Amino acid sequence: MKKSPILFIVFNRPELTRRVFEMIRIARPDILYISCDAPRRAKGQVEYEKVEEVKKIIHLIDWPCTVQYKIAKENLGCGKSVSEAIEWAFTHEDRLIILEDDCVPHADFFTYCDELLERYKDDQRIGCIDGTSLLTSINPTKLDSYEYSYYFSRIHCVWGWATWKRVWQNYSFDLADWPKIKKQRLLEHYWSTQRNYEHTVAHLEMILDGRVDSWDFQLVASLALQNQLIIHPKQNLVENIGAGRDAHHNKIVTKLNNIKTHQLEWPLTHPPYVANHSYFDYLIEKSYTQHKVFIKIKSLLFPLVKKILS
Image (cartoon, rainbow, N blue to C red; front, side):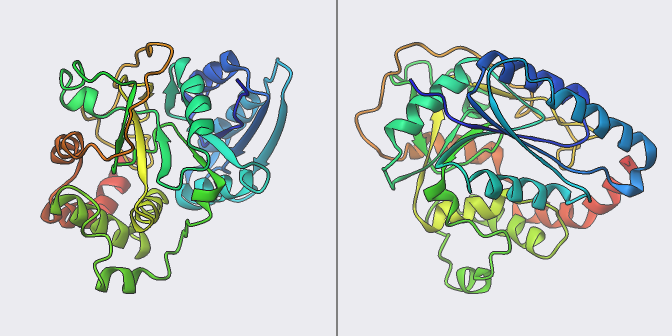
């Protein structure tokens, strides 16, 4: 099976970068794109030294590989750094496996993505392939009796994922049509619960207003507007180890972080129908999404908490 190109996005955390890079080395991709953001000037010499250490790690390519680097000269921030890296890599490729520096994949993650990227490459119903299985943490036994290797969902988690250029072409960082989309409530009926709709709208508005520096909810909106499904693995294949005071967003560790990874059973058992598993989504939404009142409070307190922790 042909190996898919990998995009590795790094920032300022050498200890995390090293762990993820080691798994990429084990996978030995034929094509590798690496994007590194510049240090934040306000963080001073300490962050400069961390970014320099990260740069040394990502240049330790010791296997036959075509590698391209995107090294920022000025700090772009989380939102622009990630979205522009994906845009850059998709100028060369029609599919990508995407990992950030705090998402440690199981070795099976790459083969899983390779097989499904090829299987669903022309299926417009499918938007992304996720490596993180939130349900295995939220309700560990619920998937025990599920007989297939993956299921279809309307919830997207960007902690290790894959997609195609055909999907990314619908992405907009600035989401200029948002006032029209919100007024017409075009996203409302995509998810299983009203709470997930409110969760998404609230986070989108914080991002578009400049209160939060991020890129992922714009992708969530794009998938919803195209009514596309996301593939979730039966076993968790990516562990997010980045939560804590040094994180860009997840300052507090929750049960959704550090979910241990497990191998898949091979060969993959494919579901016979491409249909959203709304019950699994409902279970995730109850724990994964936040009430709009809590989000409002968070939007007011987040800048203060971030400043104190920094």
